[in-house]
Length: 148
View (cartoon, rainbow, N blue to C red):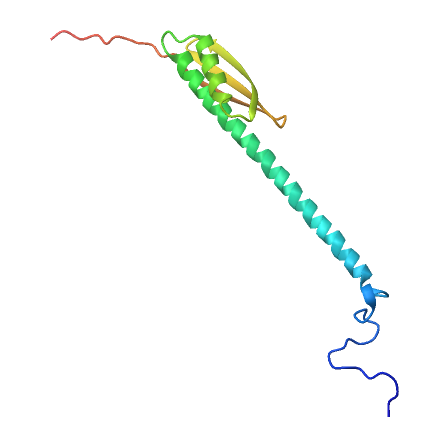
């Protein structure tokens, strides 16, 4: 016959820490520390991924704004009577309409019958994106009619 305390139904075996107050003498402390390290690594990886996505998103937005600005400035620079200052103003206005763009550099080069507009957008995260558009000057050439 047994003497001493009898185990009750559903009680944990001795030495598992469940019957000890506040987990005193618990052998799972090393496992708990490993879980904390794993959780910290996962949270760090998620935050790094979010920062990368934010950076790529801002870069994409800056590239789209620079492309739109260079194309609009090219349309103005190509047009008969279009001036470089009007093209620069349009490029700056369109590119900085995105609040993430803090500064814009516009370069217009005319070489023969071609016009090249380069727009460089500087974003709030410190990135820089340049986009260029090139096209011919637009001229009105009256059509001559051959006699009947």
